Length: 116
Image 1 (cartoon, rainbow, N blue to C red):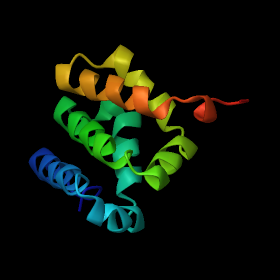
Image 2: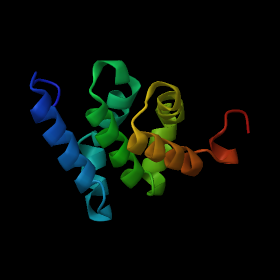
Image 3: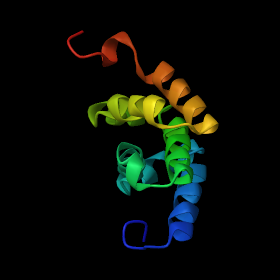
Image 4: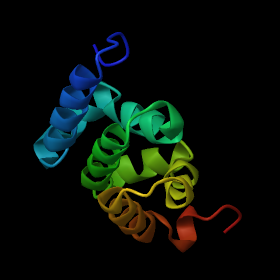
């Protein structure tokens, strides 16, 4: 539904619900199987096509999911740091910026840097 609907309200509702479900570790495996991380990453990497609310929900979902080691590794393998860091320059939504800074602090480690 998320990719097929043209309704912004429907997209926002779906992404808000997914972001909330991402809060509970019991849902992590389901989120991975349903490629929810990819939906969040796609939304933030194409921030110019989406509303600030959608980008905020996607960042909030990533905030919830990346606390899990498997999810963190997946986000790193999908160039998540690059997509997330672009929001520092292109977003002026305060909560999105706070989520962005928080995620970068967690995701950027010596092991996540190329060549180290």
